[in-house]
View: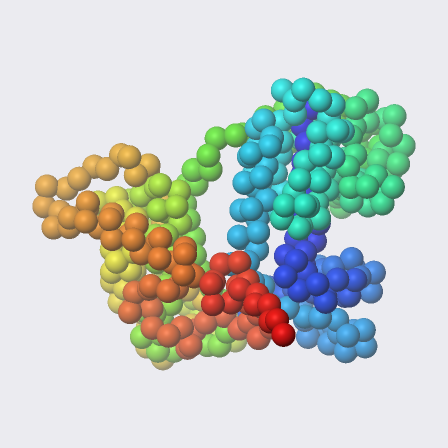
Length: 419
């Protein structure tokens, strides 16, 4: 059996964890630059606020129902996600982190029943972290996802649902909309509905050959998983990404080269920190700058790939090469809306192929990075940064309703006053 643990309304739940006054009130969390709704409380969903709607389109609803609008606090969400996943690794036999708020769990080697194990795991996470979760269990990943959907939609399940028998024995699950099936996206949903297939039951009862003909091998795999045949194994290996990207759409148009340099220094440093955290090195990087295609007549998309002489995860090196790349792509007189750094061609930091003419002391570089990372972990992100990052004022994200970094910055932790 496979379980899927999913945090309920994750971004909103993180905010409510540190601000109980938000509970039972309509709340929405916005995307970068406070553009669109990316998370909603159940109360906001009931009011009819759709996912992804631009915030300016719901100003009247916000005012009428006193909806609390928050900017995305990614530092907080990342930390709370780490806490949840750490608990899962501790209490579950095998775990595959699927997203920031979801993880698959292998229940095949547990010594108690699937329902009891799932309910106990839910209790542990909610008591230890304070984030409400739901758990779905099935014979395959697709069935586990479907069970999780049903658990969240039906209060009678108390957040835990197990598909132990064949799917057709669960009439309520069988009648869920077809796009609740994992792997059925917008295009597949439209095609299926145009061909009279609107529910999970319709997909399940379709012939295997018809599904394969029109939805290819991927659709056939989903069909097999719905019938209890596992086609997608749990991947418990440590996430070794093929690339890391850090980029931002600017809160306002950036025209000065110096501001772009500061932004790219920040992005390169962020990539370097992620590389060190994953114990990886990059052998190549891609630096890009974009203008706004919807405003300017002459849209400019500048990008350049840099082959690094020695694989590295050092912030200073990546910043240096990012600035050099900018000098080769920057054009005066344009207003830039987005920039970013992608590091790729990654290898383990245990495998370092040196360069005979390398002027850098890699051992000293590593020690310095470890000290900087430790200080930033204990004293708060950004305590020590490169001077080349500037003050972030010219290009930073628009986050007018940002809540404090309650759990990641010692200067923003909750304080309790006593009389």
